[in-house]
Length: 153
Image (tube, rainbow, N blue to C red; front, side, top):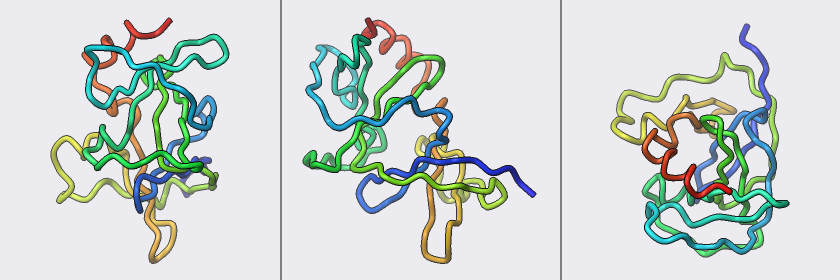
């Protein structure tokens, strides 16, 4: 029997993704983002969250999904990845579920290349509902982290 974990569920388009709750600092509504020149295209800039400057990444851009208009449901999930705080822009985030680690399968072999390394696995919630679990330590590579660290205040 696997361990129970709590997972924050968020959406990008029609797909559902999950991040373990213990990696999430807070979930914020969209707020003004200050653009920073000469950053990676999916880095939207920085926010000032209660006095802390945090780089913000558009996960749609990171995963190669077409950008979408921000709505009232758009959120910034502040996570700790590789010992730094980063904000991820997602389409919505409004569900926390308990998940048994036994139902998390490795990513399918056909999901290869750069996208596969972002995935921790795929959880089978029901016959029709799958949850893609993110591997936060791989969402940013080392050189990107160094670049983002220079943005932090």
